[in-house]
Length: 309
Image (cartoon, rainbow, N blue to C red; front, top):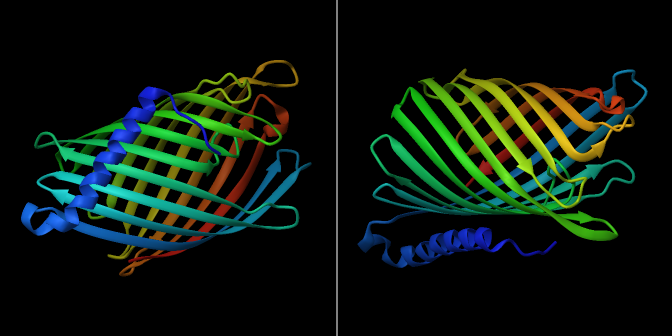
């Protein structure tokens, strides 16, 4: 899909991307003289997903399996506390089963990070997502601009706050494409106990406003995750997240505004020997709603094998 952003979002994204790109292009030729450190990188990953969801009375059972291949290339530059990065990802998803459509997703990212004080860091980021799955639609293009502030008075404690603006366009099959836009705010406190040993608390609030009544929503979430190393290359990460969503124009059979609730406990195991990235994740999803057919629960199992160049 292709569309135009509002002027202020387009200006922010374009200026940030051009700034990172200009420095990235110029830096290789002047790296030795200017002090820039240049680090290109790449990653390839294969992932398998198996999921099953059932309604509370077991009248409806939905199975899903897929295999995906992801490729990523990046270019990082650093000099005197200023860090720049350009990144491009592509994911090809092959859905298993009759009548299930394969699809691809693309993501492009430009990031600038700088130390503004001894304990403070500022990050500005511009992103474009192509054909992504969002809360409100299965085929979404998005331009996103964000600013993140990090306070880390010591290695044991870190606080982050991030504000983002998203501008989206939705593919609606044979119908005309529609648009939506809105903010997102994230906050995190992380307690560090040692190398790869963390306890993190996350809060998020977001909304999308759209002339298409099906697309507008408000969402809040809260989560906690604990990461513990087992060996230098192996760690485990149990977590739980609670998510509440209110849709502007989606109504229940009783005529009420639809409200959904998700509770998602999960366990993730990460094994990173050398340049290999081997990860497994098991989630169980409890879905509640004031629309009875959306009262569901089920599991999602993911295994991925990646290699970082």
